Image (cartoon, rainbow, N blue to C red):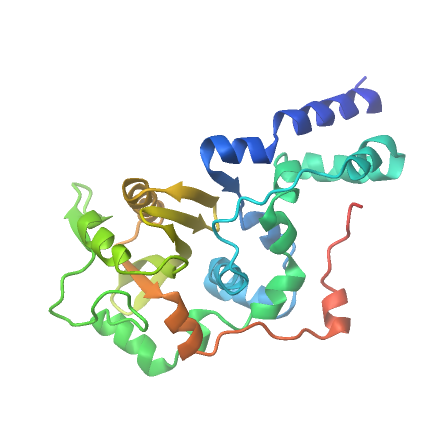
Amino acid sequence: MFSLFDFKKLVTSYINANEPAARIEENGFIQFSQNIILGEVTSGKLHKVKIKYNGLCEIICNYILLEDLLGKENLLPLHEDVQANWLNTQSGFEQLGMKFKENSNFVTNNRSKYGDKITLENLRKVEDTHILDVTNFFTRLIAVLFSIYPCNLFSNSPFAKSPYSCTKLPNGKTQICVDKSMLSERLNQLEVGFYIKFFAFKKNKLSMEGHSMLIKKMSDNKYSFFDPNHGEYLNLNIDELAEKINKATEEQSANQMVFLDAKDFVNSYQINKKEVDDERLNSMVLPKIL
């Protein structure tokens, strides 16, 4: 029989073996997956956004952008008294056990800046900021027909070179890769702290389906890259950044990519956080394990 004591030892060993700060220093990676929170979104505007756009990647990225969360390795370990409460009290441990069984990455995620920040109550504040909701029909039509995108970091001229190349695969699909030289040249022109909204998407006739991500310039040739499906990769050089970009486009089976000036996007469409009605907010708050 698997006793409570045995399970406590298992969770304790898991915590000790998964120190986020140590892992970040070694691998430069902070794990996050929007799937953790998608299952909790069952009603309201966020639920409509999730269904309409098949996820919350754009909403999550906009919150991170407004909070300026990228590039900060400030993961704090659990307070000893909190850890003791979880592991030494029956009710606290039972709640932890439920979360642990639901998601084996819970302990790590709960201790990260994203586990603390990307919550339903915070995402509720930016639920109206999806790029396809804030742009008008004409802007979206121009994007679909002519690949001219608002706040494009590169030229919108129809004769300008795209920042990526396309290769036709034997199976008929298109594989795209970022032009590293062109990307590097443009990034060198940007100031430290600059945010880029990066989209990888499939465009077919009049339909577009894609994925929203973020890039932040931390210093010369040092970048953070955030993918809501995986997490944040820190301290990337241009080669590593290009590799992450290409991997993301491959995962999305994308045939186009676009880099947007995030500051221009925020200013042009007056993107900001809104106040949330306390009564509506309280109905969405997840139970705390503290």
